[in-house]
Image (cartoon, rainbow, N blue to C red; front, side, top):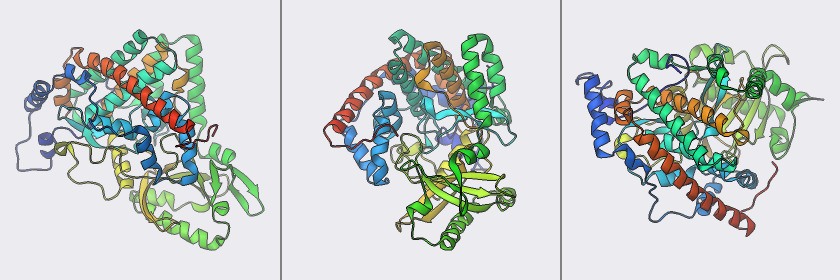
Length: 493
């Protein structure tokens, strides 16, 4: 794949490079200067040495980390989260971002920084609709986004390939090939982006129609049908489909349908709250969010009025964080807009990033952190993407980010992939992560560090198998904690 179609690079990189544009009086680094930074990083930490799995000497019990996270979450949803993590070692890996972040923090890094996704496993990539109504493939989860070492995202992606491959019954050879091809694609895309003009890197995107056309020759007829059906489903998703699925007609008009504990309307949540008082409170909240939108988007947003609101459970790792869906109406009931208002707590990587790679001017709150990170990494973002800080019904002040609930969104079912399918999917994720990193990091330094050899891909193949072993040990400890009653889990939700 060429950089002009679907595959790309990095974000906030080397300290010297990152500060150069802001410091107008200093000499701007030349491409040769930036390449020398990559060579120096390669000398300080040869790519092959990144194969070593380094764990904290006082590594915390994985169960205690989950217990600590549960303290800030909605208590009655914590068992749902644990139940979803209990499904498999891959589901556990998805939900245990804090555990892997703790481990990554003690390993040596190259010193080249980017805007991290922070949780770049296979299931956090997918398709969504651009403002121009094109289907794009990109990173689609930014709850943990933060400026930090580029290796952390690549390691998380590589580990997820091995863990998912084991769950799907792949051989070690098949898993190794998936990791090698994925990381090679990241390396090669990074090298390509290093030669491109800044604007060309920024405009690069994985248009799904072009991706589909390029992969068609590599796919069997059954795989092509599966892909076509998945994309057709994504194109049909959006506010109208959400409206049909999530609402019902009541004596008071259209309202969000209850499906406890996964969907709980605000009227059921706070049955004694006066409707007029509720609408006033929600309007105030939406007005705070409105201020984070560009002026022209505010004009669009103002054409909608509040109808209803509900708490909704989403994802695996996110379960238990406060997440609301808000139903708005435009000209009439046939013009709905569903917004998702999701709690944004501190990134699991906060405090773990080396000082030299930390962002110099931090966002004002964690909702803004998520939005800024998403805009930096994605080729195109939701037109309603914004944030707010507000006091909840429990009196606690929390940060939230806002986006459309479903906007032509779709994701691959990793658990049903065969080895060939996962390898191709991994390559697409590798290109996408490379492009996302190239947008904010020093793509020349990073490409020089990686070089054109297989030192880093080989290192990731070794590292990911070792970490998958550790993930299985942690998963067993988690299962034992549930079996013993130390953790409560509710499955099937």
